[in-house]
Amino acid sequence: MRLHRNLVFAVVDTLHLVFNEGKYADKELANTLKRDKRWGARDRSFIAETVYDIVRWKRLYAAIAEVKEPYSRPNLFRLFAVWATLKGIALPDWKQLEDTPTRRIKGKFDELSQIRVYRESIPDWLDKIAVQEMGEEKWSKEIASLNKTAPVVLRTNKLKTDSKSLRDLLFQEEIEAHSIQNYPDALVLEERTNVFKTQTFKNGFFEVQDASSQLVAPFLQVEPGMRVVDTCAGAGGKALHLAALMENKGQIIALDIYGNKLKELKRRAKRAGAHNIETRTIENNKVIKKLHQKADRVLIDAPCSGLGVLSRNPDAKWKLQPEFLEKIKAVQREILANYSKIVKSGGKLVYATCSILPSENQQQVEFFLNSEAGKDFTLEDQKIILSYESGYDGFYMARLIKK
Image (tube, rainbow, N blue to C red; front, side):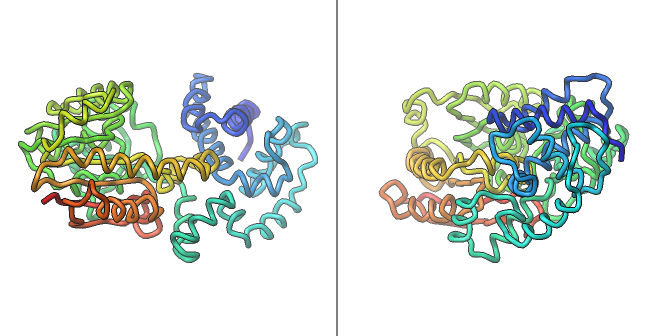
């Protein structure tokens, strides 16, 4: 493989923004890829995959390259040189890549790969907490799985089509996908590609949604005609799925504290042909109070550490801090206590996170059930989805029923 200077420089520029300026990898990559209209699919793929690889293995590569943050430009080129060497790519004769100790890189890699925090490239504090909560064996398997590149999974929009027809439509646009057992609406792409440019997407026939995330809406056991409240709706991936399961009948009230996310949900709902979604911004507690004991079903897709989705957000490993983890657990308890009041007698509540830590999941549900706010609820069912077992994101969901 021949390295092109403009592509390597684009990688280094993006890494500077992610590592030194705390920017989000996905957003910065999107900006970088707009930089040169002459770049073809292969060039763009090289930039994206290389950036994500170096972000994912930052701790390991930095230890091999013997560089520390904040990374200077020569440091970033050293990280790139480590990546290229380990991939077996011959380094060009550029001054930025001079004196790369190729043999020493491979030796150092073998040595550091014996230690989990380097092999899986994770902060010490995170490794320690995960071992405490999950045990050595389970955590080792899980973090290895979360360090693999996530597949691109689509959710068929049943309001407009079915999985087989969608697969045929994508095939006409030269995109191959396959269905997966036990995920009725899911299609997995054979190769990564920008599906948002397809006519099929513009027509609202699918959304991009991980297979594990696609299990949440059916777990809520909705039926056409119900009143359903999605309390942390965000940009609405699960609300749209609920609309399809309810066949556009009944009412979905999508709540969020961020109005801009709900604007995005409205846009997506229009494209998807989902007409039974109403958005409400949570500006104060009155918004919640008005809904007390009014809903047949309530979904709390709670804010969390996001540890279950590291395969698609590898920079989260470096942005997450122990203080944030404690803070978010307090927020989760508060949300459960407040939003559970929306459920009417005989109604059901699903608490879900994209975390793998029991302290954000089972323990939060247990805490709620033993509290004053949860005294009328009982646990009906729960799912613990680990990436190494499913091949998709780590997720948790618990369904509670109100007396």
